[in-house]
Amino acid sequence: MTNAMSRLIKSLQKGLLGGFTATALVHGVAIAHPGPGPHSLVLQTKSAAFLRDCGFKTPASVQSVSRECRNIEQGLVGTGSSVEILHTVDRKSSGLRGIWYEVRIVHNPASGTASVNAHRGIIGWMRAGAF
Image 1 (tube, rainbow, N blue to C red):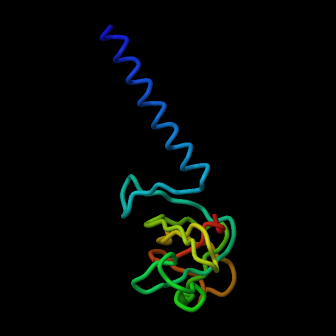
Image 2: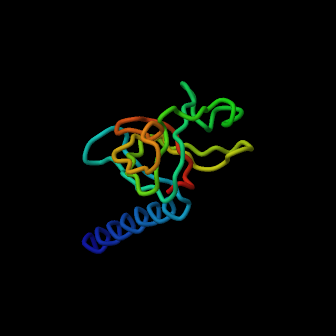
């Protein structure tokens, strides 16, 4: 009976962990570990976007992203860029709703004028739609 209980408990644990992982993936939530290291999550952009700076706030905590989170100078992130996810927030207020990621540029092959491209190491906020 003890052996059967042990197998049942292990089976339930695997099922719960798999369910949480699937739920996170379906809802588009990135589970990331902050900071550099082997556990960081690196994504590639599917579209170009500008990094935004919200000061000491996040896109989820400001009243207006357009007014309070300015585009970063030299913050253009091109298609196919690699970024490290540092922080994730969900903006529920009106205007630019959805998941936002605080990212650090790992590699940015942005085309166009080099003076507007985001360089390696720059940190800023991007909407999930860029991924």
